[in-house]
Length: 295
Ligand SMILES: [Zn+2]
Ligand SMILES: [Zn+2]
Ligand SMILES: [Zn+2]
Ligand SMILES: [Zn+2]
Image (tube, rainbow, N blue to C red):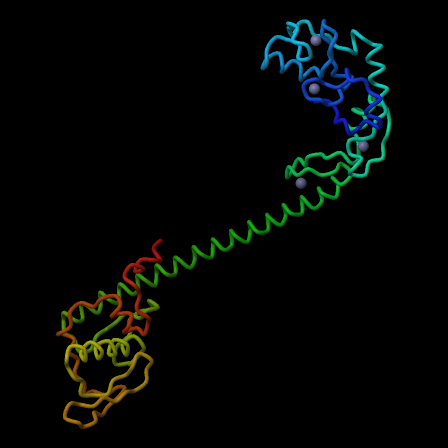
């Protein structure tokens, strides 16, 4: 707890008594304490030794108590002055400080040494005192960067909330469509009325608009898989006219708007979500991910 022996310009010129027997540093004159048995140590080191090691002098094991310790500065001014005259350099000489002086002045110099490492109160980094202004500028600018990132993140979060809400709406519309299809399937109506996916009112199948065409495509896919054959050409999910062949080899006619159709809807069981998606021209989804957009 004293000063490193490296501060001494000529270590051999300092009496061995001026080195702390506990930490082995050069005793700081201001902190120096002496014992009745004639030994010196750093005050904090000796107090700790009495508490931790036992009530004895660390140099010769003479019984010793805290109350017997005396400040060298107050009770031995001559020794205090001799200690203080030791020639030293700054502890931060390696860092570039060229200060040299007496041991008695070292503590005062270190309190303002431009090369002394001091802790930034904002980020906790240790920086040479003379560079603290520059560091502070950079340190605060980093904080502004963090602030910008926080704002960006908040905007992304808001966007995420919007996208999730839109997905929930889309899911609700799909559910409505499925319920509508199920009702149609049960009723066996050949001319269904389907709400549009955008939710803008109802669209008559006679208008051959998008959702109705897709419904026909679903019906076609399902009827084929049920072993039924449609007699007319059907419209694909993308609205292109397809021609299919009847089992007897003749090519079926018709297309968009054709009346010569068979809708075997009354034979269809309720649709699964992926069947509905296929009808809407969407990729099938894994059933585990079914409710992803609810999270
Ligand atoms: Zn010490
Ligand atoms: Zn002693
Ligand atoms: Zn210095
Ligand atoms: Zn900082």
